[in-house]
Image 1 (cartoon, rainbow, N blue to C red):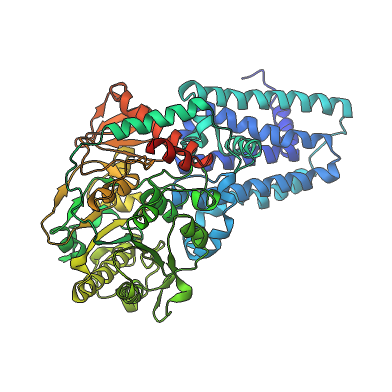
Image 2 (cartoon, rainbow, N blue to C red):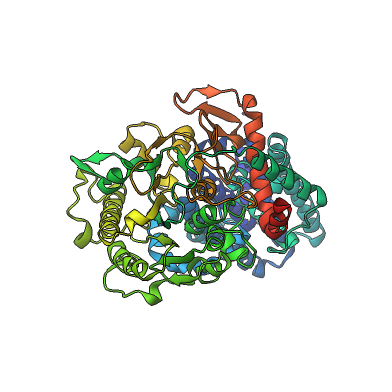
Length: 633
């Protein structure tokens, strides 16, 4: 240390601090690493991530050394502002969807304006840290200007420096990507876990690859499906068809009955049969469950399409699009939907939702799915507004009036609205439910909101019973997706007494209830088989006594399957006994939480991979009609 020239070191630091490229490089890299640290604290210990972030930022700013200094600062500021906006946008999206933005999601930006309150509630005061450097850098440059002794550097040297920096930066980026591919060889081709990619190569590298894939595929133009692909899909569907029993249980117990399906906004399974302050959170659902079939291991399989994904899963037995929402990207496809199949049996089909008809492209997609009528905000009296729109109680009152007019049999899909995130409750409707210590907290607001939704459901069921519709109808109720975003997982962990909400507990809690009530109260009981939204359609068709052998469904009939599996869009899956976090390379016993050798789940892992891959191929290449023709033969 004694041989180090301290004056020389101080001089180098001063010169470095007066170099705008150095400053922007340091601050942009730091804020990207901070983003990763917030997303997953352990990820910043990853050398490959650090290398990739540093390399990406180096490539991003090094070229500015070639342009005149008068313009350089402007370009650096523009780069910094762009990166800041990307970080904040991804942070908000992650807090809501536990995912990061992609180019295909950005094509749905118009949907965001309809959930402005949700977006605002996702903003944290701490997010200002990502914009601080925009104010700090000018101060540093202003102070360091008086001590800087830099002379103009010859253009030839600047070119050499640029080439050197670019090569180093590109090499560091490549190192990060190759390290990722070494452990997950197919992840960049399938993009099945975008968060995992960001955790390993950083936000900018991810978006660069995503943009390249978007331009290459031209979004909606899928890569041509090969004949081998088609053969594999046919064999997959054949194997599912062969697994069906000759005399399925409960086949036709709801035959010729009306089918009323209620998709409840943000209804998670953990509130079922649970009380707070001596009151049941969902007393009406609890009462219904006692005389119904109840599936208590039914997982949400939605992705970036949120509620629209839940509708697709249940009505077409296809997985969500791997990018964005199928309701928007593939609304022009052919789907052999639940509505279309029941219409072949003489049913009338309607969908009801109290929001704007264009939201999630429903006005187009419901026609695609074969619904005869879409009852929406424009056709409902807006007499009681709560949160995003018409209250659930008013919606159900007016929906019942619609049902009483329909010629039977009919299939009606009702989507609720009031319990929509961020649960900014109106005391006029929620104050009577005592949530105790959780009052005025995020979780307390959710519990109030879902209790109100349960009250509305209770009134609707009473109306069905009073009108006689209940005894002539199969009633199915399920939750669409999670209610508690991952950035608020500690609330859920505390409420359930789980302590640390680790990945195992988090995935285990991604359940929504599925209740199927059949007239007569004869068919009831709790089913513990693992399943998800993609299984709703084959299960309900069995109950309705409808032959589904020629339908290309990727789910399974939960009433006639010997074992279950729920497949999440990013590749995780849950069986009756195990939870497998595929990308993390770890599995757990679903009851004890103890680790289980993941290599023993290769068959299930392959099934999950094929299910997602084949769903993508079918949707992206619009193969449904071709597969129907094959299955009929």
